[in-house]
Every structure is written in C-alpha cells, then in structure tokens.
Length: 477
Image 1 (cartoon, rainbow, N blue to C red):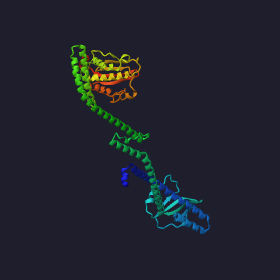
Image 2: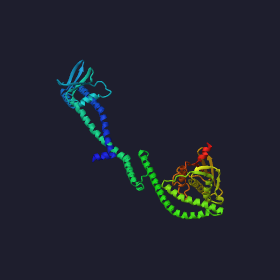
Image 3: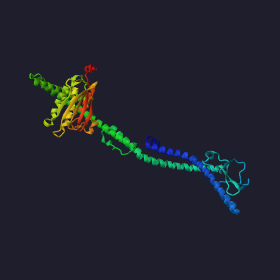
Image 4: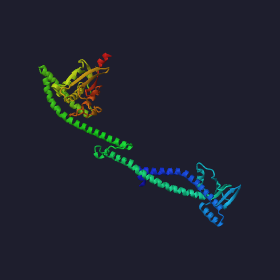
C-alpha cells in the first residue's frame, strides 16, 4: 500500500525524495562533524588532565589525591598521566600498559581543519591498542603533558555520537518532509489534481459547465497553466458553438434551398416571358429579373457549400468590371435610403477595363461590400450628412485593384481584428457575419484578395484585387 502511494502520487514521491535528500545532507555534514567531535574529545581530556595535574601538585593530602585521581580516571578513561620536565618524564598517575600497540597523537599544534583520516581510522579501526596524547604544559618548566586512553573509548564515543546524529537526522528528515509535503500539497499537488479533474471532465463533455474553473490570480507557473487551460476551454467551446451554428445553418439552407427552387422556378418562367417581350424596356427588366433569380438560386447553393466548407470552383472569363459594379450598386443601394438620405454612388472605373474573373463570384464580392457600406451609412442619424459610395480602379503588373470607399462612421475597434471571421458582424442589425468571410474566400479562389485599407470616423475603404486579363497583360508586356 505504501509502495503504491509513493509510486502513484506526486506528494508521496516528494515526501520520499525530501527524506532521502535530508539524510544525504546529514551524511555529508556528519563527516566533518565527527572529525570535529574527535578533536574536541581529545582536547577536552587534555584540558581535564591539565586540571588534575594542577590539583595534585597543589594538594599535599594523599587521601584526597587518591580519591580525586580515581574519579578522574573513571570519568575520562585515562589510564596514565605524565609530564615531561627538564628532559625527564614524570609519572603523575596510573601506569603505562606493557607490550601494547600505541599510536602517538600530538594535539599541541592548532589545526585549521579536523583530521578526517584519523577520524576514519578511529571509527572503523579495531578496538585494540592505545592512544598516547600529547598536549601543552600547564606548569612552568614543563615541556608537555601526556596521557594514554584506550582506542576503544574513542571509538565508543564516536559511535555514540553517530547514533545521536542518526536519530536526530531521522527526526529532522521526517519533520522537514512532512512540512514540505503539506506545503507542496496545498501549493502544487491540490491545484494540479483539480486541473487534472477539470481536464478529464472537459474531455468527456466539453460543453458541461460543471468543469468550469475560474481563471487563477496566481502569478507563478501553476497560475499560468490554469489561465491557459481556462482560455483554451473558452476557445474550444466557442469553436464548438460556431460549428454547431454552421451545421444548423447548413441544414436550414438545405431546407430553404429545396423549397426556394420550386418557388423560383415559377418566377423564372414569368421572367423568361418578360425578357422576350416586344417592348424593349419590359424586356430589359425581364432579363435583369432572370439574372437576379439565377443568382438567388445559386446563392442558396453557395451558402450551403460554405457551411460544408466547400465553395464551387470559379468560372474565370473576361469581364468588364465597370458594368458589374453598376449592377451590384443598383441592386443594393436603392433599398437603403431615398431623398435626403439617399446614398450617392460614384463609379470612376473606366468602362473598358477588363478583368479575368468569375461574374457571379465577383458580383457577390461587391454586393457584400456595397451592402455593408450602405448599412453603415444608413445608420447615420444626421439627414444632411454626406452619404457617398465611391469605387475606383488602379492597375498593377498582375492585378487590378478596385477600391470601395464609403463615408460611414467606420468599423468598431472590437471587430477589426476578427473582421474576416465567420459570424463576426460589424453592424449587428440582423447580420449573420458571413458577408466579408464569403467575399474574401471568393476573392482568393479567383487568384485575388480582399483587404481592409483604412477605417475611421471619416469612412472605411476596402480594396479588392482581381486578376488582369491574360491577353491584356501579354499585350502590355
């Protein structure tokens, strides 16, 4: 059960790693600590040996001296104490062992660092033999004092020190690990678990509101991850909603297209008869009505294709663009105002300018642009404000640039960045937000493009790039 907790849970792994790292740090610290403890152990006995030398020298009573020396030897494990004076060793207490292994240790010099090698030998070496410790003199005329202790005493002291350090390290590791575990559980593990649960819920049902997590206010990486997930979830839901709207639109247009074809077929028969009327004015109106009905039928099919991400291939041909612009303006502008609110159409495109484009696709491009411009200018409440739609053309090496400029109030800032995305409408008055999207795709399909060149309080300008006629281009080159 514990192995499963550690292997599966991040907090368990953190607890285990914290314990291991603390113990590793304690091992690294233990080596110099043990060497320092050995040095202090030897110096402490040398200091007490100096005190006993002073005491024995200053107390003449033998009985008191015997009690004092016995207590001293029991407490320090020193079995012999001597001093060197005038080149001669003076035995102060105890007797040296005979035929024993001695290791001389001189602690009179001040070492900057403890002796690690000697500590290692004292801890892991055998317990046989003795240490002869030389320290500084405490009385005038002495060269040094020397005492003998068993190696086993120093080894036992080091092992006892190691045991205390070991259990202290265990306690420190457990306390540190627990505190770190609790801290990381609150700061990292719990937010990640909540995020993982929200991801699982979102994967099962992206539209389920139960998986909503508010955007985090944390400034660290966890907060950034939570905010990124929140933004991603909102974007995916918006995409799913848009796809659902497209599917609904496609189904609706398919139904409308089916019924509208039957209605327009009857209207087409009437318009054909009007087109064949003897009176020229009626015949022209009939021909115009025929073209309008044909475009209405084709428009239903094209919108359906757009909802299915399909658009019919363009039928490129020579086209006098001036007349197509006039026809599109004539179909759109009269429905948006008369009298003082009438929109004036200014067509400066030369009548002989020929482009290589699809007539129906090009008509739809300019129909959408004119309709958007007319809607913007019709929203102006001032009756005496200028309402003008101007089209102009300029030729380059490979394209004809047709600019469409209005005197409307300009586009809102909130829609400029996503102007050509589906369902983004600048007017909001019953608009589907598909006009500019369809117009740009139709322009691209013909080898051209549609761009917004400027917008502001004085009006908006779009530019449509259409291909030049190949023969015209060759003649110019």
